[in-house]
Amino acid sequence: MFRPTGFADLAGKRVGIFGYGVEGRAAAARLREIADLVLVDDHPEPGSDVLVSGEGGLDALLQCDVVLKSPGIPRRRADVVNLDLHGVTVTSALNLWLHETDRARVVALTGTKGKSTTTALVAFFFALLGPNGVAPGHTSVSRRTIHRSTPPRAGSSLRSRAFNASISTLRRASSS
Image 1 (tube, one colour):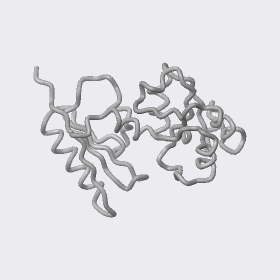
Image 2 (cartoon, one colour):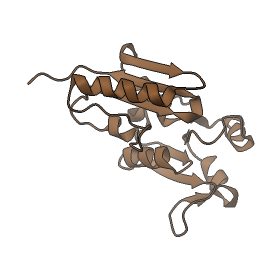
Image 3 (spheres, one colour):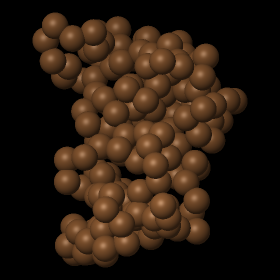
Image 4 (cartoon, one colour):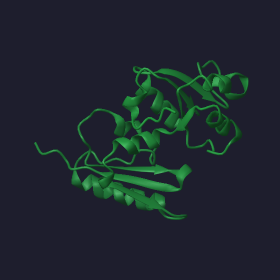
């Protein structure tokens, strides 16, 4: 079974994006030039090129090499389990990002209360290290912000409600 360990592994593959919200759109933007995309959502916007899951979308996902599941879709939902049973690899953009990231510089915040506040504080302290500190996924900035091939950010802080965790990365500010 194909197991991608980063976005580059998806080049030339048929990739399903299941859930076309903030993370799904960011993943599609990242992969549009390198992969054959199948976009599926339970309730897509009218007139979009996104397939409806219950109207052929799930069948289209079964033809994919890998499916990136959005955080709002439960991992044990029947249609996701069905993809697994048919040998389709199911992962997430967050998982691929974590594989590409220097995890020695990752801060994971877990718990029931206080993640948003702590994530904001971590992002603030990262911003003190350089002008490009950001909290993608937390303040309506998608993870794509930290996927782009721009100069390294001083720090990034990532909030994911689906995992009840916040993840932050610390990168050294480039010296000029």
